Length: 164
Image (cartoon, rainbow, N blue to C red; front, top):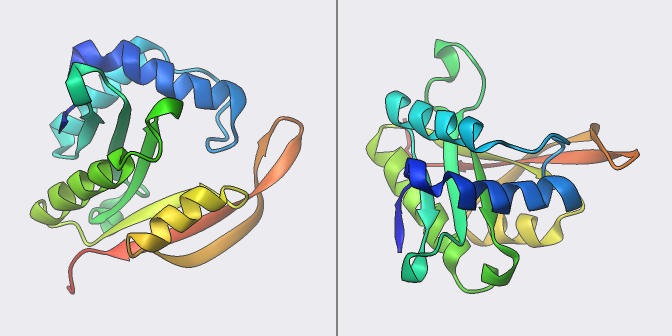
């Protein structure tokens, strides 16, 4: 059910991501993602040794998750930020948990130190999801994002993957 993303998944990933871009505040980016951009992200993840995964029960992509370096430079080379989105009808079926488990497993095997989530403060479901998976809040940035004519607070959550 959870597998690495392929080029052929780009349209399904775009549909899920762009719905959130159009209607939600879980990403502050107002510009929809093209299939070409998503293919480039999949290729970059593979080249960097990072995970870009999809949840595809019955062969249909219902969600995706990826991780990437939190900030540029070698000092952050083991600190990874993640993104996870599900199709609206796929929520509440354990796919988010399965995707996150896949990310954690991949990141741990790759020697990463932590996963970081940057979440919109008003998204109580996502904050609760991360808490249940062992993430802790490590910071809040008031008014960090702008979307739909107003500012939104950003919550940073972290999960340590290894002790050193």
